[in-house]
Length: 199
Image (cartoon, rainbow, N blue to C red; front, side, top):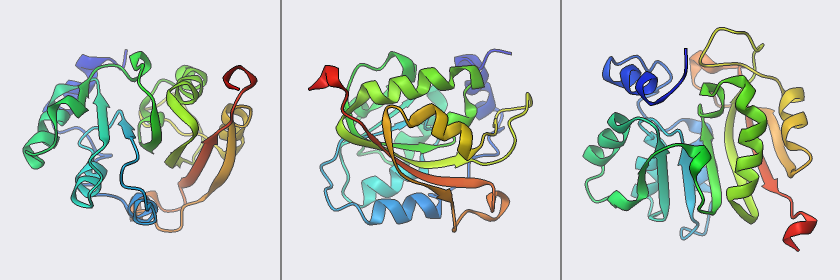
């Protein structure tokens, strides 16, 4: 089954989004709380209902962009945050983005992609991050199977995907996961390496 716009829209319309925690998760909240520069240009890809956006916006981060294939979660975000700019709610495919960002927050987007797209994800992340930009968030830590989404993965796989083009600043077991995900999540911070073509 293709994980396309219709697939994800139906999941939200039918309330089949078990990954939706209803609020920001503790690892992301803790990470956001230590960010000093609130002018950072932030992207939340494959955001779904993006409860982390609610928190960012309430804390004065107004340069935040959301992209999702499905319109319903974007409408949900707007209804919860009526003052959030429409121009920063992007309906479309992450892989078609051509903007650049200082920070990308990862929360269940990577694990929702078909696993064969993971190398393309790593390439695209590097492409749309500004020099020195970072991806931060959570990746699942359980065996990769054909059943999904969510699809699992491992620290070894993630290092193999990202180490050539990103500095692995942190990749470790999340200590404050929500109960259903305890011992099944890795918190990570990857910083974009500057390639010779960019010098």
